[in-house]
Length: 344
Image 1: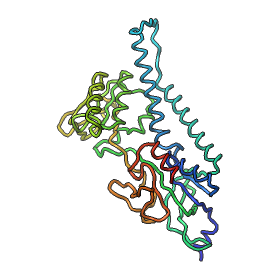
Image 2 (image 1 turned 135 degrees about the horizontal axis):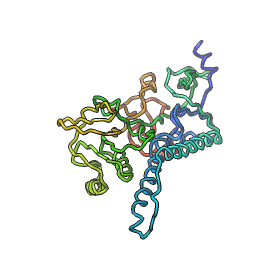
Image 3 (image 1 turned 60 degrees about the vertical axis):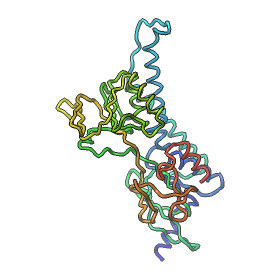
Image 4 (image 1 turned 45 degrees about the vertical axis):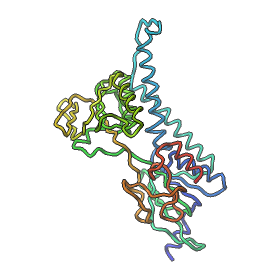
């Protein structure tokens, strides 16, 4: 009886979305057009990986790097520059961060204008609760930044909590940063090591090299992008080397050590060491952001790597709980997540 009374006093939604990235936002706003009660919770900035630490700020950095390259090639296009322009990384970061904040606010206003109730909080599942009209409703505990908690219920729940950078699992990893940390750098490093062979590591290498930073890319196999078509990976390898990126094939990181002068030393499993880095950036893939969702409480099945098992219609193993985007490991691009969110 007490559980029924508690459920009756909670805010109830027809659909509740966990995660304010591309998939979650698209689903919430589309659902709201059908005149149903929709709630969405995200304890981080709205927009997800793409807007905050992915596609958008990365493209800003790519544009800056492209301009930097062009400025150094002006003489080849018959331009005479008497005084070289100066560059300030801190100003760039401030301008880029302000641009992202503007996008965050746009997403927030879009939710409000669509009639979606937004909770700036982290969400986790609790045991289902009895509804006053019979049956069970999914219960979600929301924890805000100040520690306050509120439990809401919903008939349907979409999990769209996205992903996060994977760890390398090496000694001294606390001295490194990941791809998220790249966007928190207050100063441009003069010498940087990138651990990883995927497109994120390759993109960062291109940006740093264009900015005339001494750039080292450590890959475990012959070259980067080995899962791409051979023609692509071979050409990218060629272009990176021409751009000045120092590529170290067959290099497996063992440890990172901070020296007395605060510089970093990277040690490899083959016994080699590389010294004098300002930053070591780990970019060895991404994993689903599901650790604190309480999936075990409601019985949502997961597969290897923690990814949520979902069918072609985003249905999970639990009735009326769905998963879209990075958490299912099927479509790890914002556009794909957004479109799947719309049809959910």
